[in-house]
Length: 71
Image (cartoon, rainbow, N blue to C red; front, top):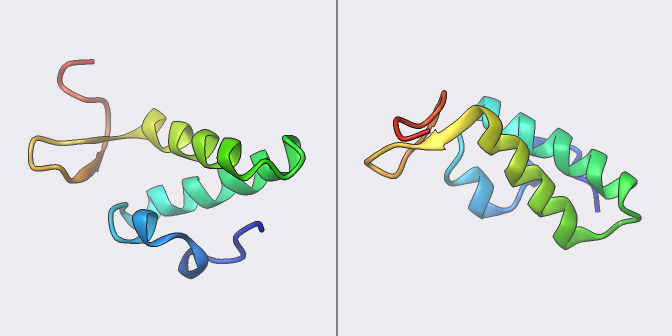
C-alpha cells in the first residue's frame, strides 16, 4: 500500500510532521515497501528513521528541522 500523495499518509504523520518531513516519510516508506517485500511495519520504521535523520522534536513536542540540542 504505497502512498501516492501526502494526503494518503496516516494521521499520525499528517497531524505531526511539517510538509517536507511528510515528503521524506512518503518517499522512504514507498521505497522500503518495495525493498522489503511489502512488509508494512518495517516500511513504517524505515520511514520514521528517514525523518529522524533531518528532523527532531523540540522541547514543545513539535517536529523541527535540524539536529536535536542533545545530539
